[in-house]
Amino acid sequence: MKRTLACCVASLGLGTANAEAGIVCNEGYQRVNGQEISTPYCNDNYVAEVARLYGFKVSNAAVRNSPALKDKICRELGSDIRIAPYCNTDSGPDRSW
Image 1 (spheres, rainbow, N blue to C red):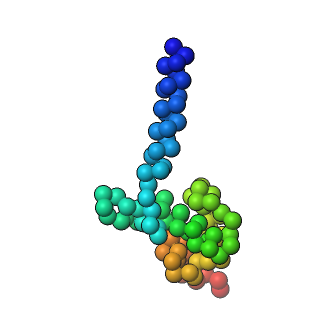
Image 2 (cartoon, helix red, strand yellow):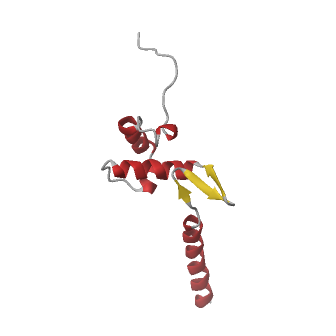
Image 3 (cartoon, rainbow, N blue to C red):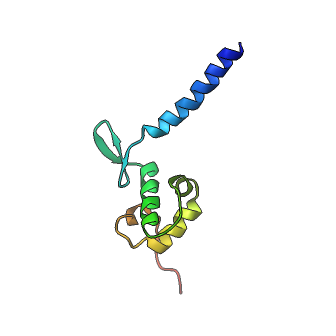
């Protein structure tokens, strides 16, 4: 019984690692069946990648899991055309009267 339980627990752990390892990103796009599509997962990874090029010490997971961190990066680097499409901008009317 203990051996069966240990095997089940081990296989569950491997299954979650393989799911994330199977995602292939290229500059904000995820490769799916030979095509590249824009996904939030790969968009955030690319924001983190560009931020690291500018000297930010951030991981992909940190940017994906913290909207505040992503907003901070976008405020500082949002004019970089590589990540501008992945940053939320306030494009509404100017209300600073």
